[in-house]
Length: 80
Length: 494
Image: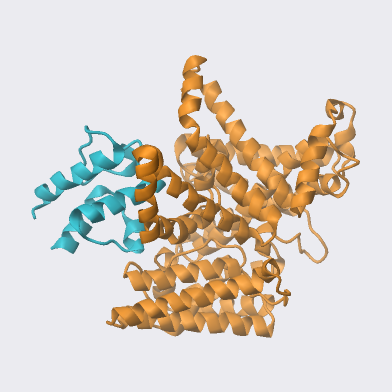
């Protein structure tokens, strides 16, 4: 899967979790850019990403994610 | 050994001199010796044995987990060690909660180092944290003396590498660290220990001082606790800075928070962050919670369905925040469950509040509205803290009752407030230095820089005059008990 293809899937996950069809994320997107993305919604997002890509994040990875770019690196690494 | 004692200052100075005299690669030896001395002075032999045994387990297990390939072994080792650490903490600190007699043995700062060491072990297991191979270097990090008593709760990545490799001498680090220590001394000795007199008078005789006396005492207790705890953290972080270590901040202008949730992201940050990462997130991400979420989503719809399990997870976390402060219900309720209830109600009722605001045409962007929200947050926090200070849940509720049973506004005009152990001069000192702390906070909020950073662009003479004034103020206006030993830090009790 290329990064672009993965981003297409990831955008769908974000739109579903945050109930907003307008969301488009990129490497630099952080929780500050999406209104409802707080520390509680973070876990719902992570679980949805896991389901979508068929991967598992450990808690250390979950807590360390700084932006969507890091999340994408991790996703590609795991499905690689 | 209190962080405000002369002995601590001598230890710090002696360690810093030894640290910078040694070659960079072995500077950690100076830290290790100071750690050992600090532990020797603070703990009994048995407590030191417990501390050392726990440290040895953590070092050995983390190293084994980091280097072992078998997932089952790694997982088992990690789980068992975390359980051992948590059980030791609970048994030594909160045994009475479970009806077991308190044996009166607990290594200093067990509530802090246990959490830091769980972080270390988990980092090794998840492969997200570094592991120190040298056992003595690990001990130098794990027992770093300025943070042993009252935190902050740390990760190895915060300063472990710097401990191990040594940091080059920098005059900036020394002066900035020393200035921060003096600032912490001022908060603790000039403000916190002085204002405590008033609070003690009210809390010792609440029947004699009901109504607004209790409100004033509660407001003062917020000031005392902040000055005490953040002062202690300033000393710890300043001491770290003198060695070139950048320790994590524990406070970020909490009194500017507009909601209680925001407040707890800015107050005791390392504890809140720890509970989020090591309690709340694992609960919410667990299979059980995911199944619960699927069920509640079906029953209550997508929006509320996913909130309900989150609220249950939040309540567990808030219970633990209270329990961490102490295994009695004044802590569990006052600084735990009560805050959880307020935050969850705020979240659950936010659609209704939004409708009310719209109906009343309230401009939620107006400055006055933000001030109202800030004051409301202080009220919530102060109410919870009144239970903390009361020492018991029943006493807390009794005081709450006494605070609203009498309306006595004349105490502000008839001189009653000057007869609570603090005369006008003492009040003036608190007011002056309190204003200095508030101005420093406002400067940081506006510029994003600390006063020390702002002073860097000023002339050296002006800067040093201010530093000298600060030290002079601590010496002249500090509250000292016998033998240069002030009252213990409130958060050292945990």
